Length: 109
Image (cartoon, rainbow, N blue to C red; front, side):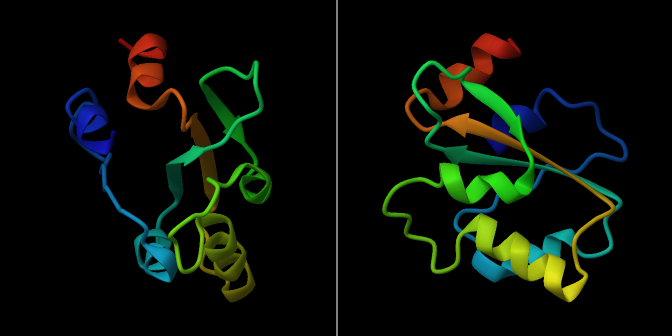
């Protein structure tokens, strides 16, 4: 999905970085940033839009089942907060696992 988005975002001050199950290494990419938009797969409740903006603290409730993350995104963000490593603004978009990239294409063709 990151690659798809990268091709649609104007170059400049925006960097698109694809991380696959980064665990605590995610914090290395957040450190020193003013605003981060994080997109993560999630299990959204039935009837939810395919993509929703969530407060990062709500990610744990929508985590993918049986995550192979040693430390999930929600737990890593909580660690980052405790260590003072989160950016000034952290916007989180959750993409429904069941709809994936097709959901993004419907919302932002």
